Amino acid sequence: MGNAMKESPINPYHRQQGASLSYEEGWRMPGVYTDLLREHRATRAACGVFDISHLGKFSVQGEGACTWLEHMLSNRISYCREGCGQHTLMLNDDGGIIDRLTIFCDAEGVYRMLGSAALVQEDFDWLSAHLPNENVELLNETEKWSAMAVYGPESGVIFQRVLPDLKLPPDMSVNHTLYHGEELRITTCGQEGDEGFELFCPAYRGIFWFEAFVRAGAIPCGMTARECLRLERRKISAGRDTNSKTTPHQARLEHLCATDKDFVGAEAMHQKAGGGFRKKRLAPLECTEPSPPPRHGCTVRDTRGQSVGSITSGCISPETGLGVAFAYLNAGMALPGTQLSILIQGHPVRAVVSNLGVS
Image 1 (tube, rainbow, N blue to C red):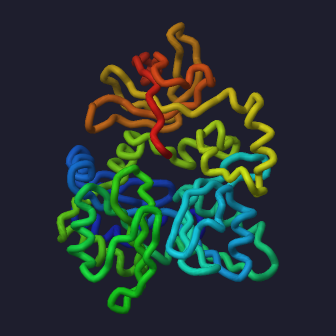
Image 2 (image 1 turned 135 degrees about the horizontal axis):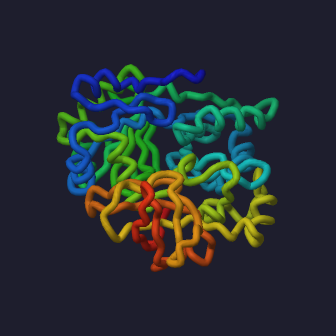
Image 3 (image 1 turned 120 degrees about the vertical axis):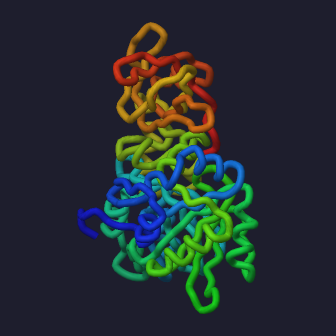
């Protein structure tokens, strides 16, 4: 896929509608469509549509696909029956997180995976290096598909307006169908914590479907709103809040690791779970006073002014006007209610550790 800046297939429409395009994990994507607060509130109160064509999209199929995926991924892939999906991790040999993936089973021996946009090549290279000699086919289909997420309490109504002949699949499910002769994949993985669905279509049809959801009443939204929604819901982002040296226990993602099977990185992960690697834990923070946005790398201090960690990702919540963020802290500090401060643009800003949502 190379290192050149990639373009979403839907970008011509975004430009036509006046969206500001920005760099997003190697892709040129809409940053803000019209107004961040409007986009944020539309998703919380009604319905927003987001271009997510930059996410990694992989196909795995063959007689040995399930067995191989059980070995490569942390969750119980055999539980992922036809039409169902699950979240899982892919670890390196040292038990560090390569990526957090969402996997769906289209049919027996046919799987589709979604990964982080920033990690597409890394994911594909790692999987390719571990492919068995036969019975499994791996394809990188990232640029084959356009993708959009339609989120909010009115998303079901919008779905029926645009696709009246289909039923919205239940949570963590997929409907892979031919709709009037066109291949569509509709999933419900809810990564940002809002109800809704994701639609995947051939790349050249992305503008048609994105525009159809806008005409049906969804507000077009950009990446900035998507990031704020994620952080407000305390949803962990692989590539932003984890890296190849972060273990599932440090990132509070151990619930995505099956305890009754072996998989790549499992032994190292278990060895590190009870040792010094557990001393750092990911914690969600809320600023308790107005400030500029907390950004990656900002130092977190305790009440004595001592450094106890640093920010991995953060923003200003459009709803409260206050900063929200994630940071790795000494385990004793990563408890809800702990009073801290974040050094933002050289000034300490009061903050508190909040409760982690379901990630």
